Length: 102
Image 1: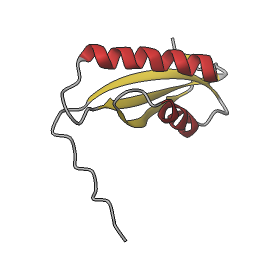
Image 2: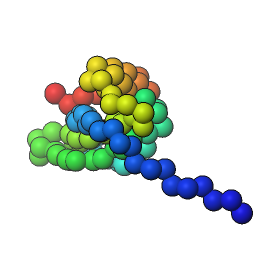
Image 3: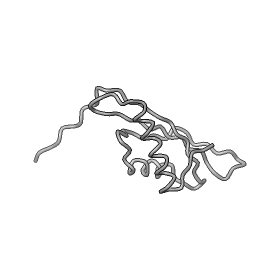
Image 4: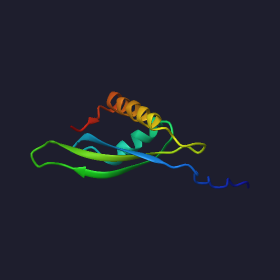
């Protein structure tokens, strides 16, 4: 049986972006992580939930996600990551009805 060797970590730095989305009270933040991952933004390496906040007077939550981007062959340009985030947020809104929390 042939086994694959584990992928070596990139020698190039990762960069992250935080984004806070407005979710219904019953929405699962873990499901949003899965939805983001399934959209496969270019160079997305990891998605983490960093905050989950709800005011008692509101019927929604604000969940903050940290998205890490990294290329294995070069350092990413800030504009590449910004474009990936803009595209991702538009797709999340269109496909799942999620919007940035204001």
